[in-house]
Length: 268
Length: 193
Image (tube, rainbow over all chains, first blue to last red; front, side):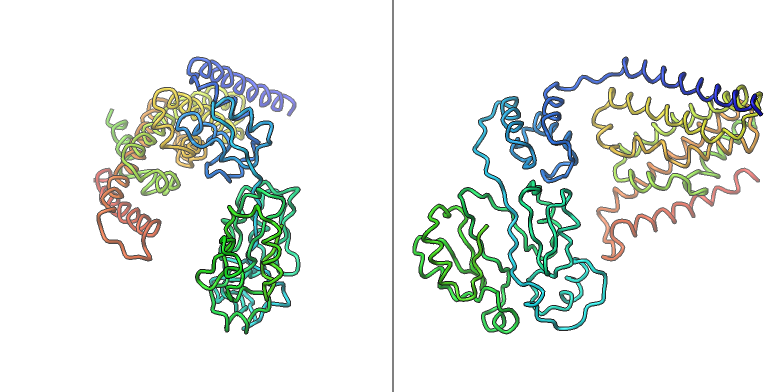
């Protein structure tokens, strides 16, 4: 018995050593010279492989930056210090980078969601969206099953009374939640100033219907557009859209905000 | 000599690993989009199969059998296969980066291609001699390449045909694989006849 154990261990170890040395030798002989910058950039990238940049992995992004001139600013997750180093390697001028913030364009908490039927299907937003919106009347609002929460690799999202809440301490703006939402409720916007104003509604329904089914929706009354000749807001498709490039005049926008009848303009 | 030719034909055509044993279906469906990459993967797999058959035969008969360690055959065979796949991966990366890129994840996945482990186990089961094993490995590899390239050339033509909406993609591919398997069954008479 002992003999059998010994011989099996020895033979396995012998084979392992044999194959390992052959492979080590082959590795030396067949080494592929890579552009050293790829490795350098790869070390600067966070190595989370979150896919927020649109490439398969951090290494893939590094390769694309070096070989195909991909935009080095594509990684949002990278630390500021490493971002500067990265731009130094690439030789590009680092544009001032503003943090991107995920905005949830819906304000309907659980109590505001007008039910149409009881939904007992799979508890994900994607299936609920396919099945007549998961029992709520609004076809544009948050179904509240938290696909975005599941998609977040950093645990920065949680469901709070039917709406996702973002923990900005943990958020890296990777954009996974934006892709996960079947109703395109979440968008990523640069926060250039102290406050970022946005419209917390995605409904393209006309005013009568919105009034009927949701107390916190945008009714496209247009007061925000009328009172701002500078074009802070523009109403198209029954929904008010803020001009994110004109958010430097905080006081004026705050005045407009107070005028909104359904208080659907929010700030982060 | 006649024996060897029979083994070669049986392994590559009548008992084709993919189309009659249904081993190695994953790369068969996954890499059969383009003829070039299909042929590349086929050749890589053929190399691994032949070498694996050769080396595992030697190990089985000169190490495992004398020490009565036949129960270690699975572990041993997997080590051999994995090492060869590693080697092939390095080699392809060096020689043909485009092919390396085209094959992507399927290249390291040759390791877990059940056709190769199946091959080595069949070899033991059927008690082949050394030369027979080598020919068996080569034949299995040729058969795998053949199936892959045939499938790829059919799928390239598929682009120009009107496929019913629900069958697009995987559906029509599996139907075609089934038909190809049926066609290969027609060769069944060669050996027994």
